[in-house]
Length: 331
Image (cartoon, rainbow, N blue to C red; front, side, top):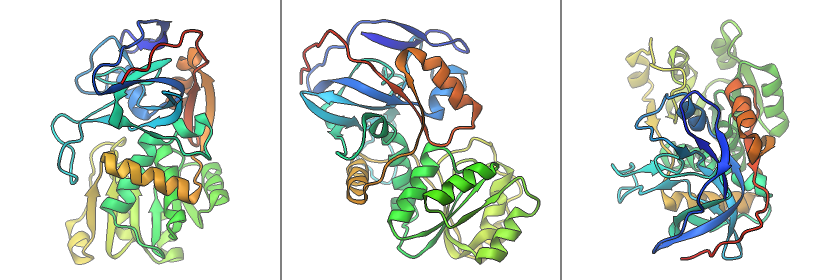
């Protein structure tokens, strides 16, 4: 089969022929039709990830065909028995196990689920990791309720956009932040009530004066800007954080947290049960993930560069052309 292989750090992926995996007991072979990139993939290529093993096929998101049925992949392995947090064996497809940037992948049978019928292959591949992360952050961790006001920071990434779409579908009023006026305008076009450009002086004060405060804030960046978020919260608000691309949080006053009784809730991916719930929510509300751009698998390095530039609005997706060889699916 053809696959994109990371052979060396800080070097382009190699599009090459590799051995087609053979499913063992309890696993199945999926013929992938489309895969999507995550920021995680870029970090791994740059060596900014723990326990990197080479060579490896990256990719956590995928949609394809298994035993004649259209499926999407649950993007993690071995969550564990505790729904409150993942166990020590938890890991994500694409490292250390080979991932979805290939024609075929073997996964446990429990890791496949029916593809939402209203989605194309590209849209379906854009859903799993981002959708699961957004769903757990909003509903499990932050317990979003209809009619609440939500702020989603850094709109444009896959998780942030799906969090916005999920919150809107759940009956929330949604605002966004971005350093790009164009991205804010696109978010408003998708249903957000408004937004703020965090490059603008005192943007947080202006937003607070205009809106009056938020019940739920969803953040992926951390960094110094995180310290402004509690000031935008209503008493009893919840802040969900699922990433830390801007690093350590400085300048956060504990007084505002305890006086306003604000909860800060970390969230990572989600359980298999939450994945099923997320897919049901997407199908019920006919939610369509935003796809920024589509590349053939052979142009995977161009797709990674698009992701690295940080200007995308939505998911960067790879299409995987049909193969002449059709191995046994196993099971």
